[in-house]
Each structure stands twice: as structure tokens, then as C-alpha cells.
Length: 294
Image (cartoon, rainbow, N blue to C red; front, side, top):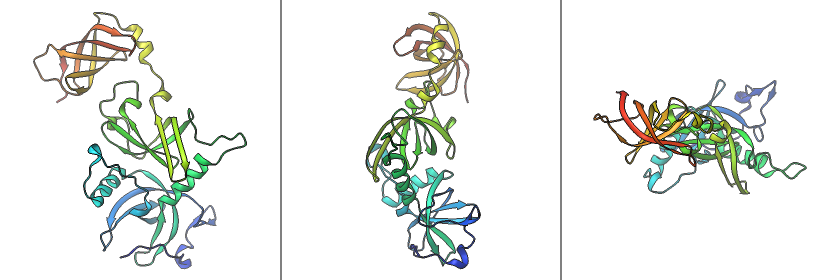
């Protein structure tokens, strides 16, 4: 099967009505859920989107997937890389513009790329009477979570995809972003920077933590030198244990008196030996493991 953008079949598409009027195939941006990944008879990848009772097919070339190629993002052969990215996106919301009908499968053929480029123009390039774009630095906006890994959340902000690292997700230690963020949900983010040359060259930096605020600053006042507090191990990296104390303070430990091997989500007893006022972090020692997360 070869997918191509063909003209409307009026016998089939008379059903495509929105609020009593036919959808404008050239203009209207629709939103559906990415529900599947398939291969055509020629081996090409296609994304399957479900919109109401319709099956929408988007060729991989129209998904506007930007693949990074470096040591940390080496997925090998192109098709495998594309498949991996799409697999991580399953369940997310995506926009698309209807382009036509594939008569063989009776599926609607659409383009995510055209929908995203249109949003680029509306939200990042068009300006109001004051010369300001809809999305700009310091503005808080809603974003879609389209993929989540242990240390990063991939979000789409009005047609532009961006990666938000764990350190920018929360002021609390974030050991695994997958415990809190999920594909398909909406989150509030603050725009940190926008670079917009034209509709195809737009980049956005954003964070989540500045929207929520830093409760650790206030809670740090409750933390006392030589105080003993219960906490939960959120992460372990190169011998440093990152603990979230029960009183709402981030803490780090470089040693543990318990002979057992410490692990993520273990409940521990922590003694404060130093308070880092600049980083708002308690430094100390894990005296024992209260309960292991086995």
C-alpha cells in the first residue's frame, strides 16, 4: 500500500462534521490520540491516530519528528530510531490537518507537520498590536506531555517540542520523572526562552519547577544541625545519595552506616551535619535504613 495525499471522497467524508458544519480540510486543526504504529506493505512507518470514530493515518514524513544524533541519542538505523520515538509517544495528544482519503483502507490521511507549522505561525510569529507574540519569555502556558523517560520529560508547547530535564521539573529531588509525569497529560510550564527565526526554525526552553515554587526554602528553617529526620532515597549517583526528608527538604549523603546496600525509595534515618544555605540543601549521613524498597 502506498499512502498519498488524495482528494476528498464526498461519499465518505460527508460524515466529517464538527458542530454541524463540514471540517475545512485545508485549515482546521484537529486533535486526536496517537494510538498505534504500523508499517505499510512497502515498509514505511505510519502513525495511527484516533479521532472520534475515525481512524487517521499520518505518514512518518508528516509527523515532524526531529531526531537527535549523538552519544546519548543513538538509536541506530533511521527506521528503528523513528519507531522508538513513536513508541515513546503512544497515548499522547497530537494535532493534525486532514489531507485526504486513502481509498484502499478507507482511512483519513493527515499531516501533523502542517498543523504544527500553522501553530508556529499563530503562537510564535504573529504579533498583537503591542508587538508581542502569544508565547513569549516568562509566560506560563499549558503543555502536552508526549514522552517521559527517567530523567527527562518531552513536552509539546503549541506545536514546538522541547525536552525538560529532571532538574527543571521540580525543586524537590526527582529520581524518576516517570513516577510523576505521564504521556497524554497536560502540565503548566514557564517559558524561559524562545528562538524563532521562521516557522520551521523555532526552539523553546521551559521549566515546571518555577510554576510550582520552591517550598524547600521555607522548610529549610525547620531543619536543625545534628537533627535526625526520616527521609526517602530519591536517587543515587556516583556514590552520592539524594534524600527527600520528611519535613520537605532536599538532602545529600556521601556515607551510610548501615551495612545493607541502599537503594532508591528506601526509607532512611538521616542526620544533618551541614546546611548548605546557598543551594538550600541539607548535608549529612544516613545512619540506618528504616525500610528497604525490595
